[in-house]
Structures are given as C-alpha cells and as structure tokens.
Image 1: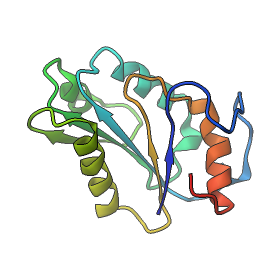
Image 2 (image 1 turned 45 degrees about the vertical axis):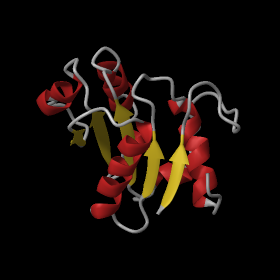
Image 3 (image 1 turned 60 degrees about the vertical axis):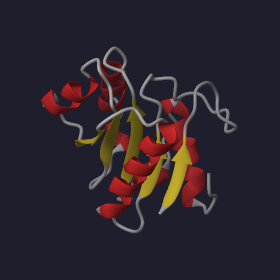
Length: 146
C-alpha cells in the first residue's frame, strides 16, 4: 500500500488541470483519509469536489472522514450523506490533534483495503489540490513513493 499526500497550494508536481492518465483507468482502489475538526462549513464543498471527479474513485475506493471530536456537526454531515461517494466515518471522542486523526484513518484504511490500494490524505478544509492528484497517482504507479 502506498501513500500520497496532498497539502494546500501547488504540489511539487506542479501540474494544473486534469490530464487523462492511464493509471486512473485501472482498478487500483484509492482510499482517501481526511482528518476533520470542526469542518462542517468546508466538508460539503470537499464532498462536492470529490463527487465531480468519479475517476478518482475506482471500484473498492472509499473516503474515510476522521472526526477529531468536532463540536460543530461535522460527523453528522457524514452520517446523513446519501450521495454516490463511499463515505465512512471514524469518530474520535475528543479532539486529539492531527497525529491521532491520521493514525485512526490509516488504521481504518489498512483494516479493510486490498494490499494494492493507494492511501491519499486530504485536508478537510479543501486546501488540497485535487487537480494535482492524477499526476501524483501516475508517479505512484511508476514506483515513486510520495
């Protein structure tokens, strides 16, 4: 299992747009791990952004939202979601910080993902550059560990 991390702004890849890459036409599952703390305002936008990119969710892919003890309704957004994304909620009872949220998300991803799955981390506040992801996934398919 490989991990790809997207952070705010441009990535080192520097690609803009959505290139059509053969890798995205394969069946390699992608598991998104998204730590969230009080992101009720931003989470619907992230979900919408992912819904517009079905090519990023091959079969067996999923989006794991790790609620880090939010007090603003963040987990309820995931629980009430009825759209096409395979959303899962992991709840931490109280805010423990990003490290704990990532550990819980990675544990959930490893627990039930095939060995060839890619794990992609995203920011719940939508600062991750989803347009850079296809190029990063292509590089991962060529053996780069990102």
